Image (cartoon, rainbow, N blue to C red; front, side, top):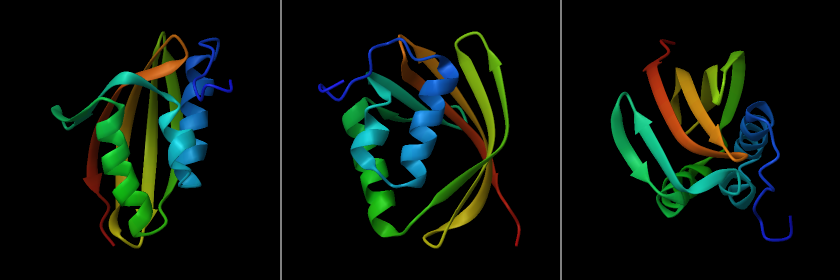
Amino acid sequence: MSSGRFSGTASPEEAVERQFDAYNRQALEEFLACFADSVELLVDGVTAASGKEALREIYGRQFAQAPVKATSLARLRQGEWIVDHERIDGPALPSMSVLALYRVRDGLIDQVQFLGQQVEA
């Protein structure tokens, strides 16, 4: 694991949990290590980012602004897909309730889809 990449033996649950933990600690490099170089990020069906470097830009800015915390409310698995119902909170963004769909191949997340709506205060 010295290369910063995982061996590909992680189950989809383990891969998603690793990125979830790194996200909550705002550990950018650990977070990015959970994703394939060619990762695709979609938000409400629209491509928001392609590739790990695009994720670095998005999440680097988000982590630098203020702490964020994700709470998993429920998790399901179907084959290589993990579906989380998550609540995202942080002072720099409105609270969100989202469905996060993660596709894991060879131990790395290669696609993320977010479907969400703002939680009313």
